[in-house]
Amino acid sequence: MLILFTVLVSCGHKDGTTASAPVESKQAKSLLQGIWVDAETGEVLFRAKKDTIYYPDSTSMPTYFMVADDSLILGDQHYPIIKQSPHQFWFRNQTGDLVKLNKSDDPNDALVFSHEEPQTLTMVSEMQKKDSVVIYGGQRYHWYIAINPTRYRVAKTTYNDDGVGVENIYFDNIINISIYQGAERLYSSDFKKQMYNSQIPESFLGQAILGNMEFDHVDENGFHFNATICVPDGAACYLVSTDISFNGDLSMKLMEY
Image 1: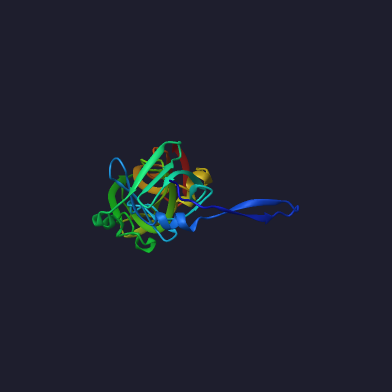
Image 2: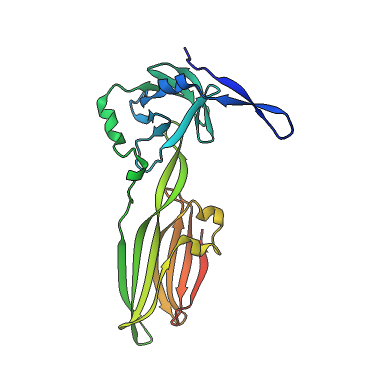
């Protein structure tokens, strides 16, 4: 039997009309406390603790939740509740499929939430360095690329196997390019993804990371590097030629999408 109580209160609008606003069910939230696993596979889906839902994946951000209007509300997503009891929780996911969960009684399931506090999220990669020597016009040049992970977070909403929206967190990079001729430094600068906003739509940049930089070639126009800017865990990427002249002038050109 579904145990859920919803109270409606009136809220005033500027035009004097009223609208009903849902008030969450404290009892339903209390029943949801604990670790929940898929009824068929036994796979851990989430842990409800106070007013926050945590996910087993350490890249997934904890999410504030409430229960109101016979729905589980995560952010702006509403999942209709079909059945709720102390040990069972059924709801419909993003595509309308019925998800059946059981409350876990296995103490080992708690081990997957050792990362559960947001401040313990760590950078998922380490600094990478690469360099090489190129010869052009009888001159010897040495280029360096350093890919530095940062704590600048990029959020991306994905849907897990049960059709529940999860906000995954990735860390952006700052990439340094340096070019030397012997001991003389011809160029050195940090690159951030925002520097490519003239080539890439802002809407894409907001959910993308500056993933990589590769040396391509050197010619009479200078040194040509290729920057890769991608949406994490997706197929959508931009490849932008990042060109540095012998005088240190910077230019960019979109290569691929």
